[in-house]
View 1 (cartoon, rainbow, N blue to C red):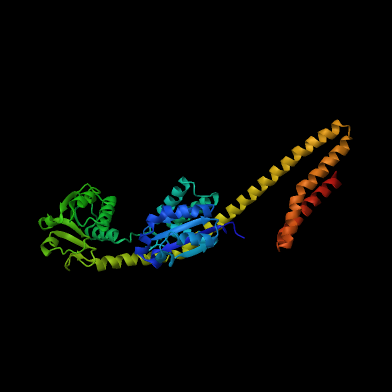
View 2 (cartoon, one colour):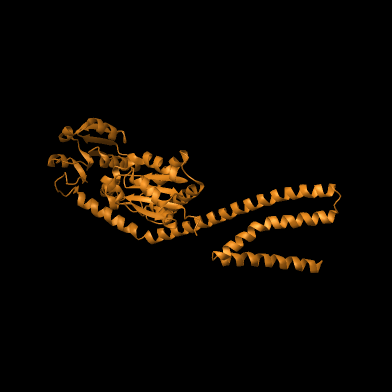
Length: 405
């Protein structure tokens, strides 16, 4: 029996269900919490663009599945996976470590795991066990990233695009940069660019001028409508991340380097144009270099699982010891009062003490003896032997002390 047996994970992943199914679940987080809170001791919902996962402490699987089917759409329930006990916690650690991501070793998911845990705690939804499980998962995720190369090298297309341009030009500090497109990819290019370099000028072109302004603010750059692209000044790098648009050759010739991550391509082939295919090739090479670290990452996860189980077992032992000691002290109080009454009635002190100790021994040992008999009947003979050997060892010490006295 493992101290993690009460943990269950209900998982819907992008790789099985698809992005459209996972995408519709984020808005149901609150409903899932309300439906499952009465059925469990505690729960944490992890909702991202690639996964929707519910971690539960306690709760009956059949009742939980019935409640989930009443909240989640049928197309999502069709792809539901269930992990129990150690397997559930191992899965969470793999998620935190980036082993279960579309991009191996991604950084964002570790923060998402921690954020989901903190959010659940702030709502009073977690239990001490869930808190320890999620804390250890975050520790495992950090260790995997710091002790292996699984997160080395940027592998997202926007980040790779910036890397390629930097390699071709020997760095991008002081450069003049233009970005066509202010969607997610364009914004990611700007974030990567201005997080690592200090370009002298940045211009963002987009169909929506408002979105161009929002994106340009990342680097403190200029925003221009896409129709002004034909008047682009000479630039060092032209990044293109736009759909349904073709950039004219005369525009491309204004840049020393063009990196186009649009799919389909927005730029014509040319010696100074790096297209989507080249960016994809570099990204895949980096991903493959990360994969070699997976066995090392799994070893770290198993180490952290072992640490977690031992901590929980020790904690369980400490709690049991605390209950036993409280029971013993309560008995002592009762026996002291009974002994004082006997002494007041004139009972011989030795007889009063023998009566008290005999009564105390019977009462304090009775639960232990009952538990040992139950363990023996239930096939837990090794526990019975362990306790018997410990008492035999202590009895030997007492007899030895009597002889020496």
